[in-house]
Image 1: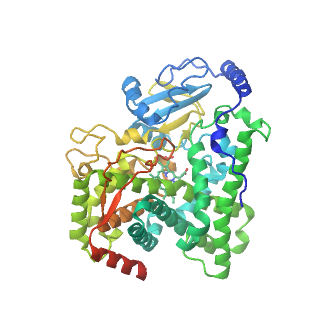
Image 2: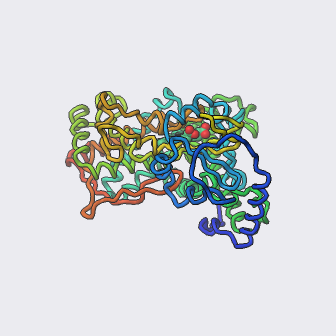
Image 3: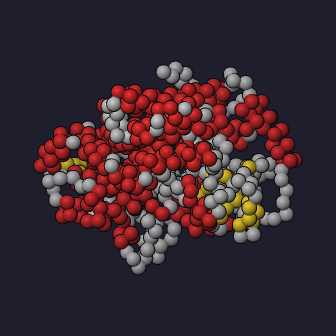
Length: 510
Ligand code: HEM
């Protein structure tokens, strides 16, 4: 059990003496900076030495990158902080050019000193550098997450969708808490075969603490030590080193606890279907070396950390949008009622009969993408783009938010209008072509996420009228790597008393 609960907030502020050290290192960095005659991608002129700190801080950078700065400097923006270079790609075309066409150069991740090196999260798949180990992890993950493997988990998703509706029926004010539990449980069931009872009691709070740390540190230059890695050599009693140690033990416990449980269940022959069970079953006992076991454990842990919050947040965006747009909600509900009827809940098999509901799913992903700046990449070699020099080790960010906000002659991008996806004359690209990232590191949980989003949203539409409270809803989001909606209120009205009986019957028989 983890005992140290050092406050994260304290970490990001360092005593004045460290700033003297920062200035010294900055000067050295300047002296040894690589020089090139070629121009670098256009961007705002930064301050001497520290560069573009102002443009890269203050929150919601993706909006500045995709609006004012894009207008001023173009689709591809260049920034500099000390000797670190950052490239922002504001269009899907540019992201594809770098991450698809030049995949061999742009499929690695930046080294994140605090969360990666010091806390040990560089053992998790989303941070592992591009190479043999990453490929081995990706292969393992593919076992559970490829399009056809995900089909075997449809009953799990449908079960958790019905359970979510029942939980909201019983405790409507806790709709966000129940939604987070639901999306977490889906991933834990797929990864470890853990039942709702187990995940509710023992694992969820550990998982939430992990996500609290991950969302703070998993972005480029989240901490001074990420900008100046030399600070990692400071003594271990310095507050941020103590916090890093806390993070290390937290992550280790997070990946080991459910893995050991499933391994024991597998040995006894009563493990539920899951990624871990499939992997253990596919391996001769003697091939489970400590090295392989370490990889399996961390790959499974990565699935939760990378997938739970983004699915939860997208459902949150959907609920918010439905409450704000009763007319769109009514149209989606009419479609569900006529295509599915009122005596059962929708499933994936209904998708082709529910084009408007699917347009609502797409619009929720577009209107506010959960990872507005995706996960950063790193240039592995010096490169050139459009006559500009891209230095090795440049951090490259795809601005997914800007991709969702591409101008459209008929449908203003800032408005929630699912109809845009049904209009062939003014086409809007399906967010599944950009909201899950690009190239070799595209989100491996895409198929699971898409199925979960569709089934959860259509189940909620079938069951409830989602209304704004009398004081209204102001759409507000977190400025973090996973940009969740800020907590908001909604009223869930059961659409008919018979639906409650149907729901209880469905949950009882699952
Ligand atoms: C709405 C839901 C989701 C969204 C919007 C989303 C989005 C993303 C994005 C933008 C990336 C970065 C890709 C890149 O670098 O180009 C990513 C990576 C990743 N996602 Fe997802 N994701 C979602 C759900 C999931 C789920 C359900 C899982 C697993 C169960 C998952 C697992 C991962 C992993 C492991 C990575 C890192 C891949 C790598 O570095 O090779 N995601 N996701």
